[in-house]
Structures are given as structure tokens and as C-alpha cells.
Image 1: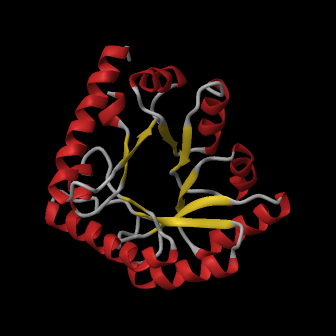
Image 2 (image 1 turned 30 degrees about the horizontal axis):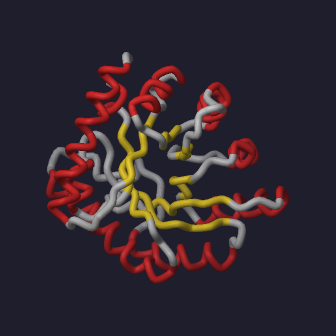
Length: 225
């Protein structure tokens, strides 16, 4: 990907974000995470040079390789994939800015154990399965607030910063919208507990997610095409 295309892609996403954001509120701020799982380190560098700073990876190994190659750049790395318990130590050592996919209390307890042993803390988002799809990980909406509170109480080395969801995988936008609205309601309940990020929206649905209150989007193909 050359720099001209990177700039065009980033400008296009920013324009769409601005339009959706302003339709909600002039004071609403949205953070863009570039999902680089199908791209190489050079593409990430090209987007960095175009102005993008935060990137997300689905696999611990890919995050390790790209962050090592690009270690001289002041990048913000997010882990957005399903975290396997046997990869927890490796991920902790990489020290990502945010783990967006803490999908159960069970995983939180395992992460807490490893963090405690290493005397480290980790910022995380709790994943909510707001579409009730069996193919998706995450805490069910009706359990989300209670689970969030339990993780806060029982896992002091995990610093919860909010919630993440993946929109319903259907063509009917009204169903996708409902899944976003469900997560936003959970987020609103958690803001008194210090939740600051409501991460919703990917390349195919991020304008809708922002209009539903998302303040963090995860876009891959829109940036890296």
C-alpha cells in the first residue's frame, strides 16, 4: 500500500466518523483503531506516516512480530482477538495498551493470576455478546454489569476501561443497531464505575455504531485496502 492510498483511506474513514459523530453530538469523540491482522508491518508504518497511531491485532504472535519490527515508532497496540489461556504470559510481556477481548470472568481470573505473578497491571475491555450469537464470545448483556463488578473486585491487577462488542452478523441493520444499543445501555450503567470506552463498530458498520454511542471503532479493510 503506498502512502497516497493510505492517506485517502484514512481521510475517508475520518470523514465518515466525523459525519456520524456530529449527528450524535458535537462533543462526542471517537478513537480509531486500525486492525492490521491481514496487513504487514510496512503497511502499518505507511498508515502511521499518514497519521494513524493506534493499531489492533488478533493474534499474540502477530502482535509480537509487528511491534518488534516497528518498536521505534510510538504506536499504541491493542489486542482484539480471542485470548487463549496458554498465550496470556506472552501477551502480558508485550504490554499492549488495551486488551479489548476479555470475554469471561474465567479468563479474567486466569489473567489476574498471571499478572499478579509478574507484578503487572493490564487495561482491558470486557466483551459483551450483545447479539446472542453462539459463534461469538463474550458475557451476555443481562450478566454484564454484575460480571464487570466482580472482575473489578476480584482482579485488582486488571484495570477495566469499558466494554467491547461485535455487531450482529446479519444483513438487517435494525438487528445490528439493536445489538449496539444493548451494549451502549450496559456501558451507560458502567460509567459510574469508571468505564470510558464503548468499543463498537468495524469497517462494515462503524457509522451506525457511532450513532448508537460508540466512542472507539476497530476498522481493518477500510484502512488497509
